[in-house]
Amino acid sequence: MAATAKAPRIKALVAGNWKMNGLKASKKELAGLARRLAKGGRPACDVLVCPPATLVSLLKDEARGTRIAIGAQDCHAAASGAHTGDISAEMLKDAGAGFVIVGHSERRADHGETDAQVRAKAEAAWRAGLVAIVCIGETEAQRDAGETLKVIRSQLSGSLPKAATAKTTVIAYEPVWAIGTGRTPTSADVAKVHAAIRAALVKRYGAEGAAMRILYGGSVKPSNAAELMAVPNVNGALVGGASLKAEDFYGIISAYIKG
Figure 1 (cartoon, helix red, strand yellow):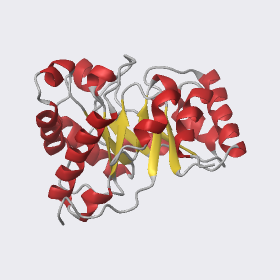
Figure 2 (figure 1 turned 30 degrees about the vertical axis):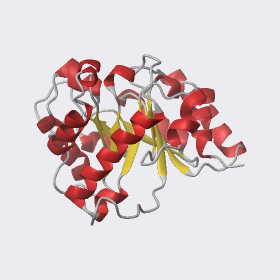
Figure 3 (figure 1 turned 90 degrees about the vertical axis):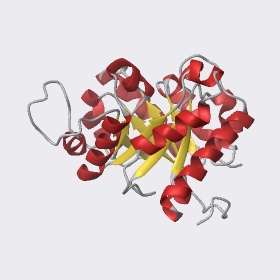
Figure 4 (figure 1 turned 45 degrees about the horizontal axis):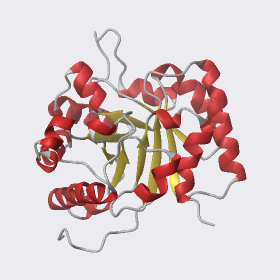
């Protein structure tokens, strides 16, 4: 399948990454989001919240009967074993998660995770029946050196298993220099990178690559969501800080509500 072939219709995904934030009382934010989704127009996207592992089970119960799916932020590659402090994909599935983020830049930077480790975690997610959200993105130094496309192609090649499909895998492009900084690339910059990601996916996976969701992340907020979500090959967002408050997160999701 050629990279220039007409893209299939892809349902967007707006995912909130709570990172290391949230206590039991935070379930009120999920409840607030659910109320907004129930009262507002139905968004033309799936909605996902990825809290800390301590809250997955609690928020899964809170989200029952709503339009919100629950995911997790990381997993170990092994199903079980002597790995003190780690959590397996099977444990996350058992707690109620349906997705798991792997390879986030903060994991790569803070824990030295390699592409190979990210790839193993994606395979672990599939093994447990979870959808893997595989993160890629360049640092500011790499961007300034003109290496953005080289870096993201390398990370895609190393982090995605050979068996990736549109049903099991989501790609999240997060320019590291934009995460939590309030800075965002221009729409043209985002379009260029997402087009390169799509081309790489199609080249490797054919029709499956054409159908994979590619999320944009990096200081997404209500004020810029509509513009960013309208960029070609942007199939939703991976949202950090703005997902912690129901009102802000709903403001981003609203980019997919018509009328």
